Image 1: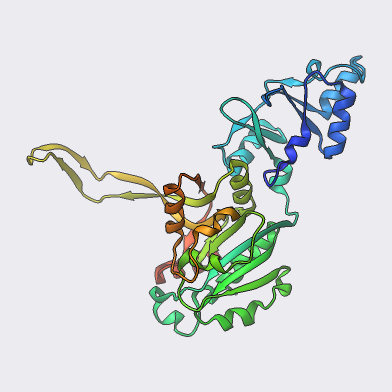
Image 2: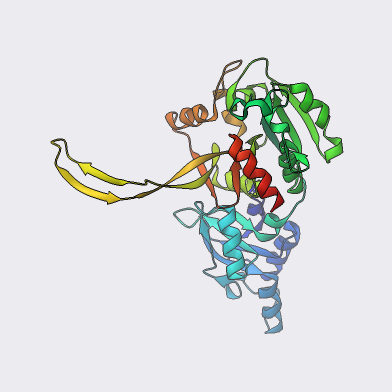
Length: 351
């Protein structure tokens, strides 16, 4: 986008009374095919595209004509609650290449771009893969093999995850390792065989799903974190873009989960009087999917050399008045926690 990873969209903003010539300079400088017309308060009033300009010049406008005569007024826009996944779907439905993101006052705060969302161009942001767990719930399977190295199909689970990130443009990785760490390091090395760079965060003891982040070198950009036992088809690039365009302190990926009680549920008041009976009610809720986007300024919240889980970090953010967000995915997702999950992963890989 122009871009969710920064503030480059500001270079596309121009006043509606500026000339077409000025607009062309703006569009050319930003190397895009459009510009955003905003008023003095930054409120979006229109969008100007190459097509608008061509049609205007053919119809007799000159390079000195003002932008507000030829722009598309009241263009499609979204607010910051729209995720990258939803934005992509909307752009496809509306057949547009971009969607401005505005706040409650209509001021531009970001921009979704179909081209950038579809891109696999290399990103400078890091990814931390948590691969230090014991995997005790998988019994004998992990006695001599760390869970992330269990094979799903022809590849270790962690390799499948790594390659997915590489395909979407990530090249800088940290792997947090502990249990049977040498087998992971021996397989992946410095990452060059996988088209990336890998460094290792060695845990001297169990540090939880967030504690190992205290071992990271200083980070200047938002980065992603993922458990090394989660399979998904989700585009991680979109998670990062969504995190930045919202200005989130941290973002947690969640998956909708439904549960049907197989009995009639009886409601009663404090005196034992029945107030209602619900036959096999269904409950819907969001579960933590084990994938996150983190802004570097919250790293000081993670204590050094201490067991610390991701829910602890998000609770600390809420208690401190920060803004953690969720990113709800509808894509395939499987947390390999038990033998049944591992067996399902094998079947899913075949399918």
